[in-house]
Image 1: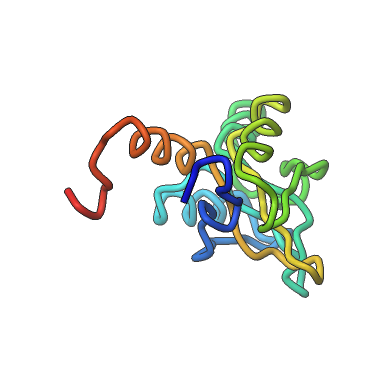
Image 2: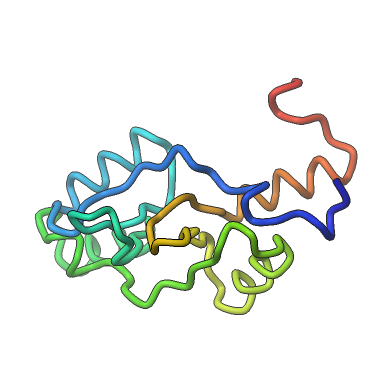
Length: 138
C-alpha cells in the first residue's frame, strides 16, 4: 500500500486500555504502568469517550497535590481531538503536529471509541519506510 493511501485504521491500536471517568488517578497510573502506555482514553458507562489522560496530566496533578486519589475526570483533558478510522494517516499526523499532542482517539460511526493512534505508531511507520525491519520480524 502506498503511504499516501494509508488510513488511520491501518495504524491504530484496537486493543485498548481505558479507564472510567470516576476511577482514581491511582487506578489510571496502575493501568498505564501495567500496559506501558502514556495515553489513557477515559470512557463513561456506555464506553463513549469523555476525555483522555496523558502521563503529563497525571504528573502535573501529582506534582501539584502529591495525591493519587483525585478522580480521573478532574484531571483529564476533555476537549479531545479525535479522528475517524477512514481518515488519511497524513491528516491524523497533521492534527497531532498542529495541536502538539501524542495520541488521537479513533471514533466509530456510532460515536464509540474504536482505537487509538499515537506518535509511536507514526514513528514505527517512519522506521519501516526508511528501511528498518518491522519489530515483529526482528
